[in-house]
Image 1 (cartoon, one colour):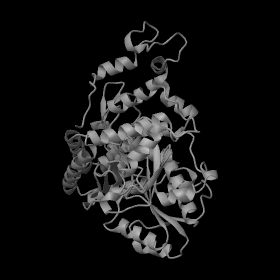
Image 2 (cartoon, rainbow, N blue to C red):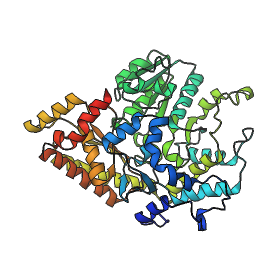
Image 3 (spheres, rainbow, N blue to C red):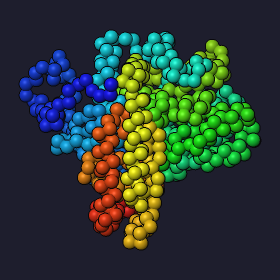
Image 4 (cartoon, one colour):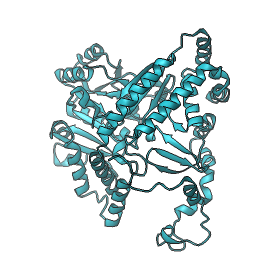
Length: 497
């Protein structure tokens, strides 16, 4: 059953709780047995939460508050539940980003919360380091049982980027080869090694020399990959089954052919499932849809249950045993926090919930229906070039319309800033309909949605209706430039200088 066991309190109560005067008397659960002088999170938020944007400007990334204000995304969120976010003004928002895919089970899922409370109450020894903790072994077992066979081993990380860094080390060690191939437009993370496999140049620019031996091929071009592999010095081809930036789906047969080519030339196939894995595309792993048996798989995001950072690399036993081939190499690759009790608990609870609530099947059903309805909307609006994706990972690409009046406005927008039209869809979806979405990467006219996998048919239909209404409004008027554009286009240009 998809849903919640916790009662969703009225929005006004949520806001009242958020702003409670903690200088007064504390009663019931609000004290938690707290003594005078103890850290009080509620009191801290009650007195300082309103400073969030100024704190970020002063102590963190000053450009993030600026862009959020420009887009009208500057909200004070005070509560989250399932697919919904709630702000201090009592408005709720349908979260179709899900923390870039982290909240596959929605926000504040009670099963994950209960598991984490249990872990704390057990007072388990945590990160002893010189140990083999049971929870890590159990989570590794649970992940391997979801692979094509049991000839795999698991290494735990703290993020998707760290998982990709692990893959880079593993494949070079296992093959003795220096080169790694990746696909154009790929996104594998922003740490230095992962960034070396990043096909989006806006992320690479101005960071100097990256990891040597990394080169790209066009996504979906099997002949280009064959040419690179023929050199005989490639350790691995690292690829997303569906690219996160732009939601480009691997062509039929591409991953299977890539796997065969890699093995023919002594290279490994590493599939990055950080975003696509654990049900996002309608199967537990996206690679299953192409009948591929990968050598290595990276995961993260959804494995966390939305609470504790956790990632993993699931690699074939032969690869792992090349890295850890004797006792004095037992810690040649490790992570201090990788097997911590809370992360392992979150991972185990997440996999259990995916199974018991039949979440993957639900995501496949709702996603298939949602894509079909969006394609129907697209046929009514000539700016929609394509609706693509699998499950609940969906991209909507826009292109220049045929009508002369709209073509002129489109061309002017693209002159101002490439990809600006999509931003003019994202803003009213949020402002007028309370739905959070995103542009799928700079300089692309692709709207991307990653709804929680527990999204209901009614919530999906709400997005379809809002999307149809926004496109209709843009096409009926000069809104491309003078409606939303007046509040977004020129500030976007000014702030980009």
